[in-house]
Length: 636
Image (tube, rainbow, N blue to C red; front, side, top):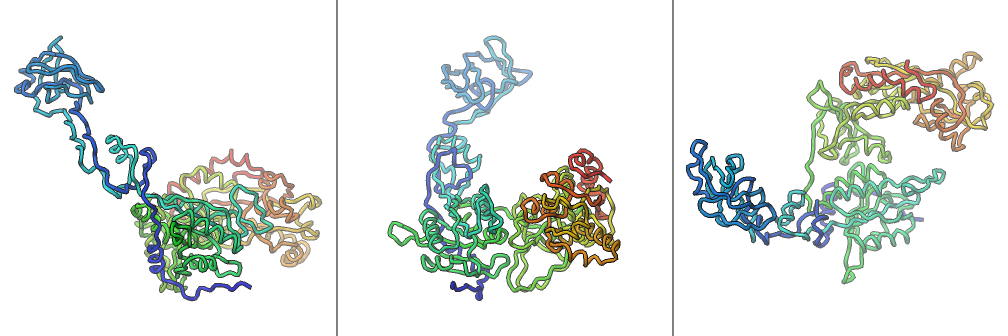
């Protein structure tokens, strides 16, 4: 029996930062072709080996002259000079400008011998073999002398300079084709767990398989921080396989990251691998999410046989893994790559709801941000579906740090939000409520919306609490919310059935028959509509709704999304499911209609005139095409 590793002595976050900062991640410098140098960081100084420009160059079209020949010239008393030839860009001058003469010259051309200035063509007249000069010029006017841009031997760029298009242009002007740059740290990524499947491969949910989210997520974070990510095959929960993969990654990379297998679980073996094949510096951090973080070193095959690669074990849940990576690992990768910390964007907002917290460790709370035209500060609301919910990655805009001593955040309290990046675009519209296919199409016609399908009951509660702009609700409800109805539509609902339930003609058949059923969760408006129909059926037979519900095999088996019951039927897990005609037809399943349900678009009373709210209302008013594409739908 494997001994479970408990996290009794959690390190403070500061200690975790120090442990990772002490790891050696920086690879040696390298030379790269100039066309591959954008975004890299110079490893050493670059000096100019030539003058730029390498010759005296005309700055505009005109005539090359001896400046002293033009002294005193003006519009009323011009000077006339003999035209002795012309010089164009890319040509060697074949004329010499002597006293009393001039030469036609193009922008960028070599200034011919004898000339020390250029008169712009607009201040001259061609008299046919002679040029009338109507403006006096001084020596050097409209001429860039050799080395005026940068002179041979001067310092062009210093070490630590990040190469943007501007620096690339300068290096091109100097004729540099190979650039010495800081090496990009190579970061190996190993996702652990027998249940993981690569995206694109076939998934078997019956075995508890899930797609590997962390590998691609963390790889994108590594690249964003200036590292070079390398993805390795999945490691199962087998000690020998994990040891082999970690050793290979350590041999080939400057830093090894693993995700999963760091929790206190009997199947986790990575703790033993690090202890036996390296040095474990830290195990467990007082931070939420992300308590089970490991920091250490892994033995690798160095030239002297004693080399070690840095190692950090990330939590298995995607939100936890990315949060810990951004907070603790990404800064170390940037330092190793020679990149500065990115511009941080921190905004102050008003917390929307009361949030209790008393766990005694730093909490990195994912939050969403909503701009309000009628308030000085944006609204900030928690986005917490649990560390295992991947949608939290895109539904949050940043993080609020909650101090370990905090017992709760009060509604209306000012909080500082550290945005995930300075270019985060907060949503123009926040909607909550019922999950619905027509709504998904309407939202496509609104710029920058965010919608949280929390169900009708929860959506109306949040609208009452003042968080979202709009809530979409269906079914009977006892919630009285101060709101404006912007519009509504109807949808046909009923039972999505398989061939095993082809004799089901109505709700009574479901109650009296021997069928496996999948219901919607209690927050869904469609569930409330179903329960109301069940109540009516019970009243007809002088029975209770609870009695009928008990007779339905699977009544308490609930799922969240509108398609989920139908997909359970399609997979053979159920004979019937609560759903919509539109869903049944899209999946090629049979449908037993039980009626039509009204779905209402509610808006917060004080946000009806918000531009994004108006856009959604207009989309609904003009939704005939969308309704025609969805069987059983109509604008109410």
